[in-house]
Image (cartoon, rainbow, N blue to C red; front, side):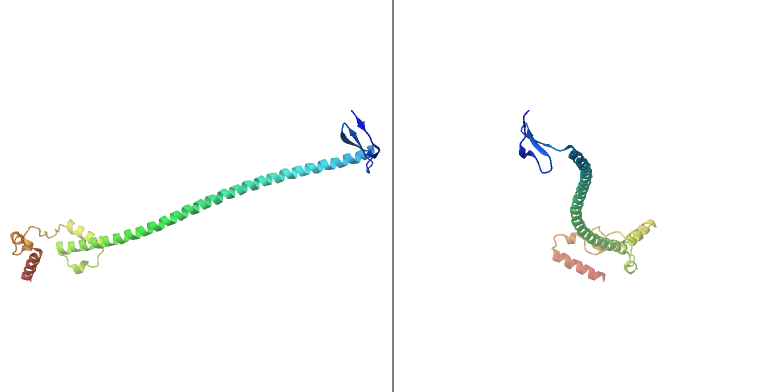
Length: 193
């Protein structure tokens, strides 16, 4: 061990700095040592407080970071739901358009069926058209069902080839063109008047 002491090793605070094995070692008076120990003790307490504050700050940071992650996940979920909502909104619009088309078709078919049922009651059961002109389809169907329940039978359709019971026979129709057939039908209807 080598000790080197120089006259300029004396510091202004009364300590001495001496090189021992190439390292500067500071020596202080014993009276100053107590003050240094007290200062170190205060520094140790301060370091402990700072470490505790740092641990609390780290805990708060971790909690805040977790909250940020939760909020980010929630925002992503909301954005995904918003995209799905936009898709559903588009699909609902398409379905509403499709439904409107179906309602229109259904209305036309219901109207056609109503007229056919009304016509069947007027022509088949010989019901006065004025009595049933304002009836809805459901009422017309109930009327027809009631007529069938009480034994009323519709008048038979005239499909036996006798052309409505007139004087024209099926052999009269063969080989005739549309204009000739129309002329014959007109003449036949004029005879019935």
